[in-house]
Length: 102
Length: 395
Image (cartoon, rainbow over all chains, first blue to last red; front, side, top):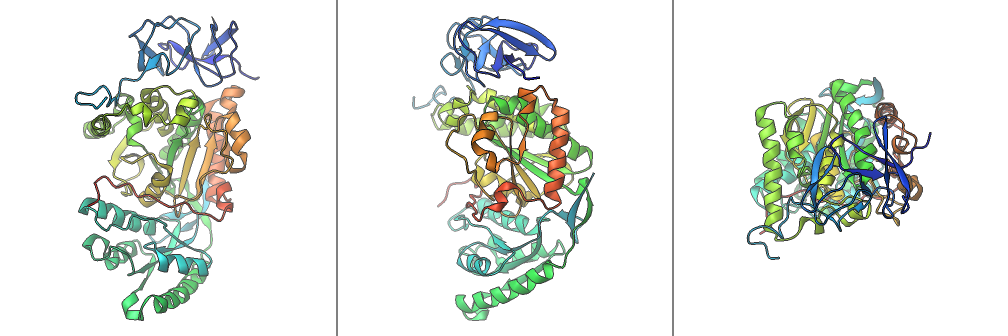
């Protein structure tokens, strides 16, 4: 059996990890354990990158492993790719710290 | 669960049978050039102009490497750069290694009449020690005598899904059997420290995990830089990891599920067995030698590599006395760097293999390597230098 699509790692997650190169418009099987859902890809998502499995409004937590991996920096639609263009980490951010040089 | 190892006087079991010559530098390097079966550490971290804390870290690293179970005997010489500092006094280093019951020979350069005479003496002593060492035979040893260290690197999203959890399974098996396992990388628990802290064996250990993350984050913020321009490293981002929190939450999977017994400094030896977190730096050039100094006989580099397209030959032998085993779960990495990869766990992603069955295969591979099978990078005659993890500024 060769798995395709994307994997969700915990119930609370709003992103899944692509385990194949996903093309725009593809209806992608998304697995959480034995459960399989589908999400329609709005854009290309390469192997190893994340696809939103729910709408994520700007400022909301992006959840993977059941934990926050940062906040959405713009409104993300179900089926969008989620990466550094629309997701910001909040930890260790010297650029945002009081007295930071930038 | 047995492997064939070299029983040592202190009850530990070597998976290799090195003669170590320390400290590094010209004399040690030339003895090693001349004598088969010898090994030294290649590092510019002599201790000169370093604080007492950093000098002690260097001494702890040298002593720890000397005491590593993979080392049969040690030759200590007095020609180090910073031997005038009490921490780095070569007699102290030789004495502390000798407490393990190993044979330790001492070459005093001034007494021999200078470097060239000391080199001649060193070569003759090393030849004799190496031949004596070769009389040791491998015996069945218990998994409880195994200590292993892991770093995950060039991490991508295959690391958190498959590569790291498979190593985590191995860690659980080794710890259950009464062995020892080390993980670390103080930057890469930021964002996951609340999850990891739940696994502290005591409230004090949990508090220390949170403290290490907070100290490291404060240092990161004090730079004024966006941490994402430093870590996640470019290879992580090219492999699909977006934030430090995401990297950390994936990274802690390599530690399995056992309770964390304590927090160790770089190169520090644990007081007991079980799983330990080491407050170390993620660099490949630094972390593996530190694990070996803590007592690890084998170190694993669990590679993502999705962001690498041009690295078919991977870093070699930076653990000085412990073999460096490479593992990956990324099929693209296997295709590029297969000549250096010892274990592939990508079946978890590609074929739906379970973490448990894949982890059992990893355990079998580890037992074979522990019994003498070479890791792939051990076939390469090159040793990368070691950068000892020092926390203070030089002066």
